[in-house]
Image 1 (cartoon, helix red, strand yellow):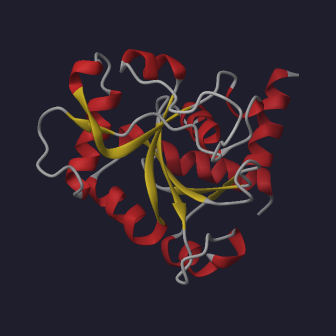
Image 2 (cartoon, rainbow, N blue to C red):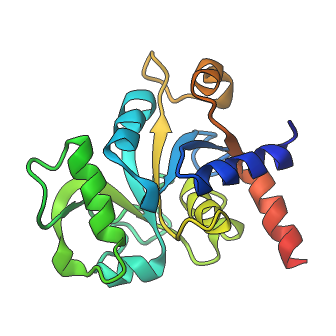
Image 3 (cartoon, helix red, strand yellow):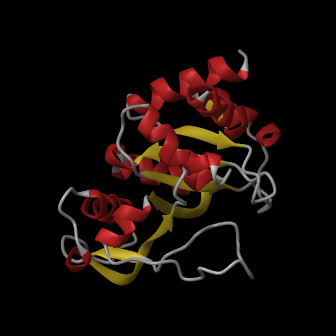
Length: 205
């Protein structure tokens, strides 16, 4: 399947509430991520990411959502950046125990993306790591955070997403060629950031 066809399959999977892989992050050396629309997150999805991704489980949000929650970038400047636009970590203000379980983290995501959510609904620090996307999405910043939000929007699945980078068994960061068995075992679709950019640029033309 070509990249455009695979992108369509990924969008259909996201719309159905399933997890996909994002590849082609140009700011993190080619790291790859598991991604699910935030509105579709369940304890089972969090557990899948923790088991098969093993990186930080992050919540990608728009600048508007971050302002609503009282969140800002920890490091807003261009220096000493990690490739991830982190805000402070968060936890739901109520309804969690230790905060780290799959159910607690799924609950924190649900609280943070609720329509009327505010800073009063979250505590910090916590076990969910918000990422604040750049205005303009992946066309402005070709990275997994922005791609995840653009993909969710294109799939009609809201404007927030949960992503988790994928590590190999040896602890090194995985590349797409490393996860053939994972893709096959779980039927995961792959959304290439390059294909997403081409699709969005074509829509703007």
